[in-house]
Image (tube, rainbow, N blue to C red):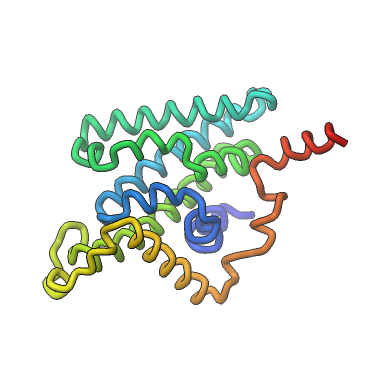
Length: 222
């Protein structure tokens, strides 16, 4: 796979949110405002980038039996750095993201890229993969947030939209509206790609980050 394909596959074909359905908690939680969605997307991309590069550099050093705890420690370190930067230079955004900022540590997307890609590839390809997947996550988050903010609050990035402001649909600012908006966006992606973005093999055991441990456990039981 060339570097361009690695970079672009996360946008639509293997979008972590719209295709793999990973990281849905922050998507549903912070998508009431497009500005917050952008902040979460950038923060998550920075964490994926940092952790992917470092894990790729250490992939031949970290013992296989303790790789998962090592990944978590590394990811948590980068989350802490990102949180401190936001608190120092973008405090309102830090407050807006709240608990979901430190919860990037357990975001499925971050761990999946480390386990599925970074531990098997060189640092350059791992960095490209991180940027592509981070961009795909950010894009999906902004689209869902824009839909919810425009329909629910009558604004976009805080800018009021006159007609929508007077005809806002309050449910889109609440939890059910998050599920509705996400469902609409996923359905639209499946429609324009004619279902090709979702492959049956994506849901099999061979693409699970824990497949190695699972196979070992099964073999031990047999």
